[in-house]
Length: 111
Image (cartoon, rainbow, N blue to C red):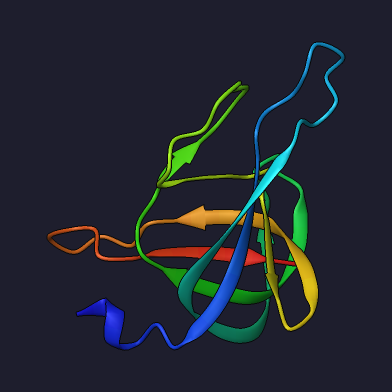
């Protein structure tokens, strides 16, 4: 049912972890359907600092990766990923999964 409302295309640029020198490894671009809601919000990021989010991107649920990793599964998202839409790349501020009786979508707030 959520698929009806996902009318925007967003490129999810997933990082593939870090190499032995802690440099970011290669990236993989994946085009996903989403709904973009433009609204300025003040919120805490994953590090606990107050920041401003310019948009909320609603998409199908994915597993959230927190911490270090060396490989990625298909349906995952990380705070180090970038979302690309409107010709700009946006970093992830915070990720939430609103719950009712099942997880139907996830909200990604970006700068």
